[in-house]
Length: 237
Image (cartoon, rainbow, N blue to C red; front, side, top):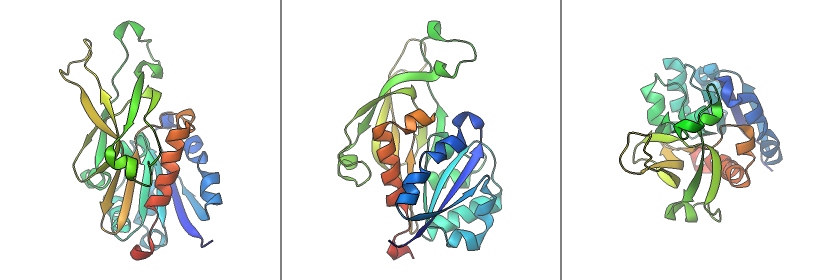
């Protein structure tokens, strides 16, 4: 098996368990023939030589900041063929101040609606845990990342995502109207999408607030397949 180079970039807000979450997938990457490099900040993105040698970036950095040089390096690497993937806030809520980063990944976390007011517990992260459905789209039913995956239920944060139509949406989730929320019709957000950027591929999966959600069979299957699909292809070499 030809060795491929995977770069794990992790850090940012600790509430998304960037170390424990990325450790879930290291055995899969090793078994799939990747040499793995781990960085605890996005500083590596400004290293053009290191990025050119990287076939796949797995990012888990919620919020935090990246310099213009770092974001420029990341965009250049993906445009040249390096794959980029991640889950939840580690990719869809990173580097909020960088519009160039948001354009690259194609979606930005806006909110995760809360439970009924009478069920809220002050200071509990479970205030935003809701039962909801991930629904595979028609495209998703045919795509290598999600083919054969059926619609599935989760009880965790349900991401409301701001996005654009350059994304190829493989799965969605719908936020219903509720009397304690101000919106007036159901809102459907992408839950899994791909995005082509130059010769590179981007895959975003929004479930993944905690490592146990990453261990859900359907979530894990989608993320692992997404890693393989996003990886630099021969045509991008």
